[in-house]
Structure formats: C-alpha cells, structure tokens
Length: 107
Ligand SMILES: [Zn+2]
Image 1 (tube, rainbow, N blue to C red):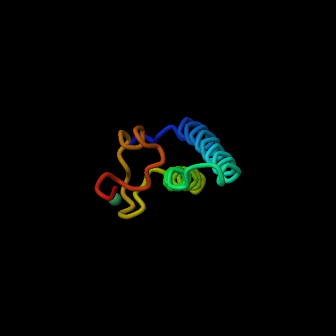
Image 2 (spheres, helix red, strand yellow; image 1 turned 90 degrees about the vertical axis):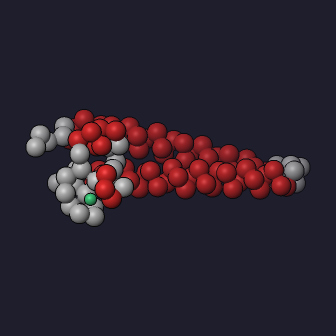
C-alpha cells in the first residue's frame, strides 16, 4: 500500500484547525455582543440565535476534535487506520476527509 503523504496531510489539518479555531472565536465574540443587547432585543429571536450558535459551535468543536485526533495519530504512527477495526482507511476516503477516524464501513 502506498503511504499517504503525511507532511501534506499535516499541513492540511493544521490549516483546517486554524480555520475552525478562527470560526469558533467569531462565535464566542458574537455571543458576547448578544449579551450586551439582551434587554433591547426580541428574546425569542435571541434565544433562537443562541441555540443556532451553540449547535454550530458544537459541530465545529467536533470537527476540531477529529483534527486533533488525526494529528495525534500522525505523531504515533497510527494515522490512516480505522479506530474500530484497525484496518486501513482507503486513500480516497482520507483524501476527501483527512480527519476521518474510521473506515467507510464504520463511518
Ligand atoms: Zn473499520
């Protein structure tokens, strides 16, 4: 099996991580601004926006965790293997999703 180019993968994961961290930072900033306006805004709308922000933040944090995990697995030499069955994750799948933790059967 050809080994994936881990240097390129790590660069990709690093830049994805930076982008996710930036997006999470913006969400936190928006939330803080929302608190300031709380007394003036329509409460239901504010609540809906806060739920939306939290949902988005949770999604971003999940993606960030996957990326951190992938970087850790590059370091310990287990990158590219499924966390469930420990078989190799296909190269095409890794290319489409460098932070994949599991093979297509265990996605
Ligand atoms: Zn598997």
